[in-house]
Image (cartoon, rainbow, N blue to C red; front, side, top):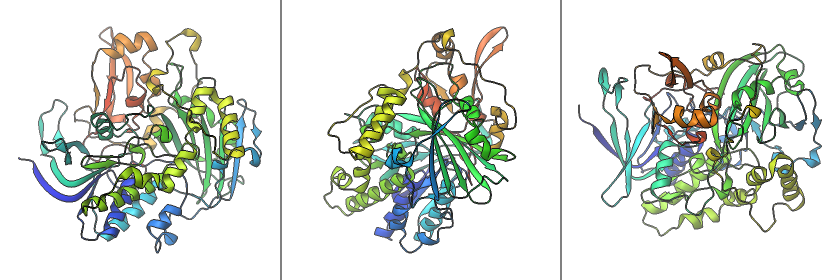
Length: 539
């Protein structure tokens, strides 16, 4: 069976907010354009995970007649609280006037981002966009001059040894005049494009966090739809920054989560276990008591801000959204920024296809997205460079007193993968066993994520050097992949009397943390057979 090819004016990789916004805006600007969107998940929204408190203005700009009726926008934020957790049972409420202005959420909504993406995809299809879920882009295509001319989807029906099964179906080449990459944080093709086209030249290394989220059904008097709780401090200690959240939305549900920066230093640190402990704090526990956990997920978050934002245009296409790094770290929000980047990409490509002279940097720097990201340029770097306490104080002073007008830029030049200290018994962390009331193990959590992969397929987590996990990472860092992975993908087991590094690829949540945090940069995340992975609809 030979590979077939098909041609479009524009092909978009990724069915998140940025890719969908691009598709819709392109068709609004020119209904005659042929636009194709590929999504690696089994359906639009199945791989989307976010808190999420959502700023709606960009959505209203994109759909001025329809957005007011969007069923996802049904729980407006009613109240904001910020707590500093000073210990496992202690906390201090931060007065509203001391909260960074970026954490005030008046006018925003508590939503499921996956459900929002499903709604936008319906609008895209009404506009004439061809959407193909379950088809991951395996590689990008170039012509003789090095210009990107489309993408290639992966073959399906391949067994673990690389042989064709009875269900074998060859992939397809999708050719396009312009290709937009909107894969989300640490996109596997985006990573290659950044390297090949030097899109990060002059930028600081990108920085990431891992975000955990659970949805609980609760039935107690503390539930109050529209209430937003953010936390800082415990259980994250010295050398680890981040924060927690708890959002009350409709139908007696709350979303609880913890965001942990991936520049943490302790090799024995387990982000998953930190999240399980976080839920036991009285300020969080009070809302979960007598509740039932109904879903779990984890995802890497791109949070370097404008200092790490790569050049978004290249010869033949664009890289946008969290694939490029458009999240606003000071707001802990990326969805509205992703929408804005998608709209800007569509406006730029519309001009390019019409052979108009246009420079994307000029378009971007004249946008509200640039102004927003520029104002928050020091937020993450201050926390990384100065630590939690000094960094938080600096951010308050810059945001609330100087209104983001200080005339200098703080930069963090260290990659997240280079931050680990060498393994030392002094750093060892012991975590209590799960109580199965508030804290749980990875296996039961994974079940609630809906994760599923065809078991007899090639392992999609590739090791550049299979010996490194045991010969280097284990010796220097006690192989931290055993702890930073939120799905139990990596473990060292005894096999015939010897250590063996096992990859349980069928557990993979597609969070990309391993690709980011591995201290040897030896793990390369690639897409598995189409449709595999978690199912986050409703998260």
